[in-house]
Amino acid sequence: MNVRSLCLAILYMGDATGYEIRKLSTEAEFSFFVDASFGSIYPALNKLEADKMVTCRLEPQVGKPARKIYSITEVGRQEFRDSLNIPPQKDLFKSEFLLLAMNANLVDRETLQAAIDRRFAYLKEELALIDDARKECEHSGLQWISRYGRSVHSASLKFLEDNQHELLAMTQPQNSGKLAAE
Image (cartoon, rainbow, N blue to C red):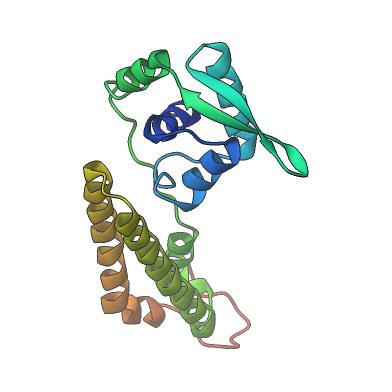
């Protein structure tokens, strides 16, 4: 899936501005699929409009420039449905925390404990985001993926809670001044 398909997916659910699409794709229920930025969303919307997959109307605002509201067309709906028939790429998972964990022997215990604490906070924030998205939407597909995401993040949190002592045991003594042997 790409930003173009993501825009169509969001617009399939209802009309939106580019800003709303960006917000949904980075902070809400659509944030779990594709990385999207203003720099990629607006060119995608322009191309979708040129390809007659979306339309754009201006909505006047008091004291501000008019807002561009995007709507999906029937051609865009079909394009999105067709894109769902393409086998998805493998999921991408990248974690700076795991790079630190892999090299725990090169840092002191306090540094690693702080990173673990930040990871706990991150996972709990993600779980709260998932729960909030789930409460706000009755869409059955969103409910399913919310449960999936909750399961993945809960398992990660539990693993870290149960095994952080092993990771902390790998650290070098505080103030050793030397890198641990590789």
